[in-house]
Image (cartoon, rainbow, N blue to C red; front, side, top):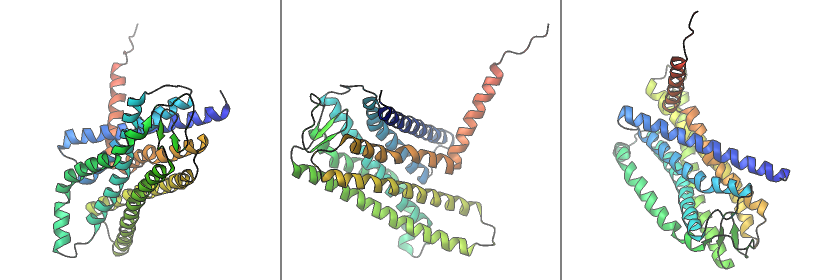
Length: 316
C-alpha cells in the first residue's frame, strides 16, 4: 500500500475511532448522571445532545470514509447512500446548531438580570430546551431533504462534473447552478450560526472579564466558579468549531469554483470538517467535573473488580 494512502487511512481511522469512543463515553457518563440524579442540568442536556450529533456525524462520514481509504469498494447501494448522506447532513447541521444554542444559552445564563424580561427568560430557559431540540431536528430534517435526491452509489469509477466524490458515494448535482446553489445555501446557514456563536462568546468573555475584576481578591462562591467554568467551556467549544469551520469553508469555497474536485482536496475537507466532532468530546471530558468523575469512578470500579477476581495465593 502506498505510504500516502497509509498515512491518510491511519489519520481517518484515528479520527473516527477516537471520536466515536470519546462521544460514546460522554453519552454513557450523562446516562449514568441521569439515572443517579433523575435529571440533567440544562447545559449538560445540551452537551449530551451535541455528543449524540457528533457521534452520528462520525458514524455516517468518518467510518465509511475510513473503509474507502483502505480499499473497500461497493460499500453502499443507491438506497444506502441516500440514507447515509441524509443522516450525515442532518448530524452536521445539528452540530453547528447545538453549538450555537449552547453559546446563546450560556450568554443568557451569565448575563446580569437587567430587567423583568431577561429575568423571565432566564426562568423559562430550562423549559425551552425540549421544544428547541425538537424544532432543530424537524427544521434540519426538512432543510436537508434534498440531499437523498442527489446521492447515488459510484458508477464504474467515473466522476461526472459538478459531483462531490465522497469515495463511498457520489453527490451528483447535475449542473453548475444546482452545485453552486447548494454550496452557497450551506455556507450562508453555517456563517449565520457561527456569527451568532461568536457574538454570544464575545459577550460571555466581556462578562467574565468584568466578573474577574470585581471578585479579584475576594473568595469566589462554589456557584460562581461552576458558572464561570461552564462559560469557559462553551467559549472553548466555539473557538474550536470556528477554527475548523474556517478551514473547512476555505476548502469548500475552492471546491465551488471547479467542476472536477481533486480527490486530495475532497479528503482534506472531510478530515477537517470532522475534526470538531472528534475533538469536542475530549474538551467536554477534560472540563466537565461530572463527566470526569463518572469515568474515574467507572475505572476505579473496574480496578477493584479485577483485584477481587485475582486468585489468592495459597500457601503450601
